[in-house]
Every structure is written in structure tokens, then in C-alpha cells.
Image 1: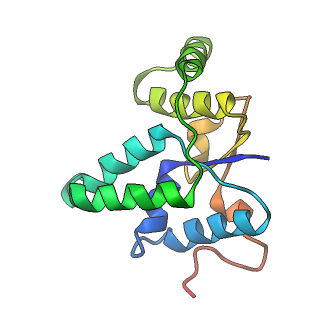
Image 2 (image 1 turned 90 degrees about the horizontal axis):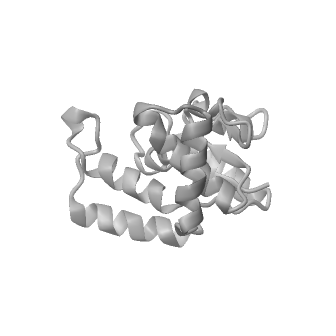
Length: 156
């Protein structure tokens, strides 16, 4: 099965001081150890840049554009990047119309559209509820990926 890594997991993976950092890192490492190739799409990088450079007082990481550019470059080396095609928009439009998506949820629908176009069936995310409505994919929490006996929330 193919996994898309949700932006929230990418952000927690780079923020070593965040309480969910360890869970994000362990889940990505475990997927790779199990022979998976967790992937990203342009939407992930756009959302990542937004939060990474947003001021801390506005729920961002407060980094500079130069730091964001370097981190985006690193992410593109670590994860296969599946580029947008015209089919991503067409699939997104079908999803938002059939599921009656409104407001900010259109961004998650775009991730799902990219997944469907690129043959991905699972999304690794801390926000399981955001993806429950989509019958076409499965949302997987990082804690579900880590082998039992390893508590991803506990410090090493």
C-alpha cells in the first residue's frame, strides 16, 4: 500500500521540541523499515511553507524563507514528490462536489485527489477525523504504524 505523509506529520517531524515529534519520526521510520515509500505532493510543500514561516504567535514555527527553502529541499530528497497533473484538479472537483465539501476542508480534498491520481491508498496523519468521510482512502495515525511495545509519545 502507498502512503501520503500529511503536512502535520512533516511539520512535527522537523519540530524536535514538539510533543508529537517522536511519534512522527518513528512512524516514518517504521514505514520505511516495512518497505513502504512514504510520499509527498506539492500541496504538502505549500502548506508546510505556510506553517513553517508563519509567526509563532500565529501558530507557526516562525522560520525564515531561507530556512523554509532549505527544509523544502531536504523534504524533496527524503520523500518521493508526486507532481500535480490536470487530473488532480478534475478529481478534486469531483470530490468536493460529491462530498459537498465547504470551507477549509477543500485543502484536505486536494490531498485526497492527488492521492487517488497517484495511486496512494493511505495517508499518515494526526488528523484522522479530517479524512474519515473519504471512502476511497484510509487515514492512519502514526501511533498505528509504530510496532506494539513502542510508545511513540514517550521520550526516549
